[in-house]
Length: 225
Image (tube, rainbow, N blue to C red; front, side, top):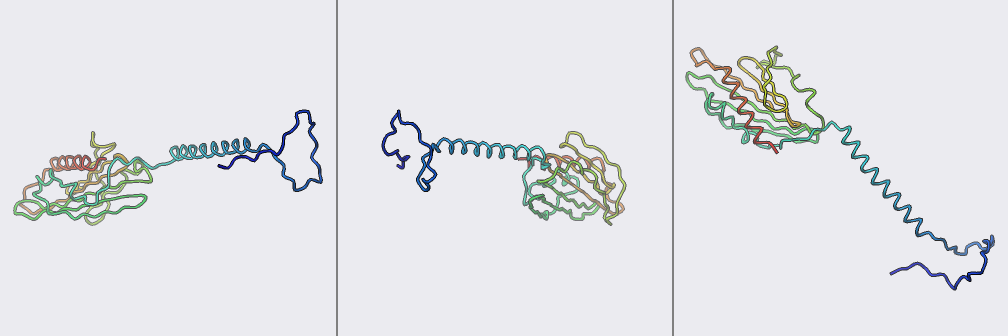
């Protein structure tokens, strides 16, 4: 173990201190440096700790990134079978999933179709889940335009759905209602379109919306962390 060098000889207690000689250039001068280095080390450590905690405090104070309460799904069709809607529309064919992940946004998507049967309307459904990892989606929630099949903007009534997420809105055309839910830094969108021919059983719009709400609730439970 390396120890501090010892002074050679002893300093007589009655010996007066002598001033430093200007011609003693190059001679080693012994100073009590150990305590000074420990003091400097403590100051640097304290500054580093303060800087780290201060940065975290500023980050927590000014960041807009929400806490994501839901997990990303690479196969949303498996998580969203739309059983309630399937009970009205007939069994949906196997869905077509897609997804993407990025530093700012993870999204997953699934689309569904039903086969055409005599006397019953055909249905098309799609589900989109967006996990916003950088910015809070709340300020822009519900401001997107509603588009019809020709991508024309439609003016429609929007109704709030109580008891579903932080905010929930259901809107859309008579034949293409859309349900959107904001919750836990995530936006869920479910859209259903239906069409038929003369003589087909008329679709009950209220029952269709109730089925959409039920399927959305089950999807949110399935993806909850």
